[in-house]
Length: 184
Length: 205
Image 1 (cartoon, helix red, strand yellow):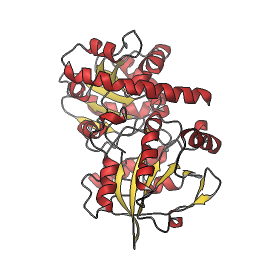
Image 2 (image 1 turned 60 degrees about the horizontal axis):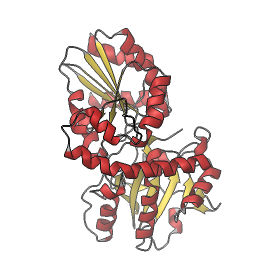
Image 3 (image 1 turned 90 degrees about the vertical axis):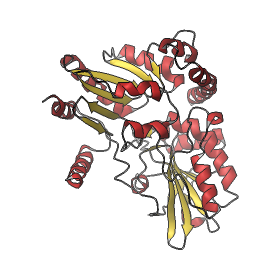
Image 4 (image 1 turned 135 degrees about the vertical axis):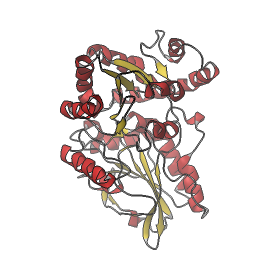
């Protein structure tokens, strides 16, 4: 319990820190992703993953390559998200010629170094991991999909011809079934 | 055809269980204008609480929240502030923990008591024992706010969604969704933004 309190207090402190870096973000929105990461990081080391606000993230939802893109929204604190990650990893490994998986972490800034990095390392995640950090959720959630209420796990699958959004979790079979609709 | 598809998806969701799935918030639960159910749930002080206990209330801020969700924790102080701001105006906060403590041990009744004492909650903090209330409301995540207006027909849903537009930093908030909604309701005006979305923690069943 004491730990929980500590965690709460730490996150509060860290959350307060976020305000300043947000300013920096809008001031220098042309800055390198990694530089932004350095500014945002509460520790001295930069966060290992690219950090986007929604505007800079949006192109990831609209790639025009020949692959089918699987964009999974998750967070380390989301149990059902963690449960389905291995299926996305499997698909990414098995079908890398046709499919590109991008794991979009919605972890809070205070968790990037403390939770997200160790998690990705321990699980040896091979898919690309990016961070979406944009508190104006009511503005950007409908831009991902009009039907999305904000629950995670949520996944967008798209290619040049087709686009589907799923506010739900997947088993491996279900994910494959959905993906095959895009590949055939 | 679309109805059939949605129905199919719904059946799929039901059959797979809410454990791994978040029900579609657009298809489930209350919409604006619906009459919300009352309940009798155990408060952290051991007493049962119902909306009907509040004879003089003009409405309620029913907030599904919990101890363990990082978003819920980020909003705790703002929920206390809402209660302090609106209880005296007849719109008290009623917080409900919808999580199953057997799945999320940090949300047990004992830990709810502890959290409420540590933070100095000024409002009832109820456990949705048996998890029968949150599905009726259609809550999908924590925190998830329902503003109700007491009318002759019952407690009518006036607003559903997030507290404000910046979970990270209260000082950076530009739209105070809930405050705007309560203020408009109390002034007898149309609420401008009636539903909002936010990332939240799925409810643990």
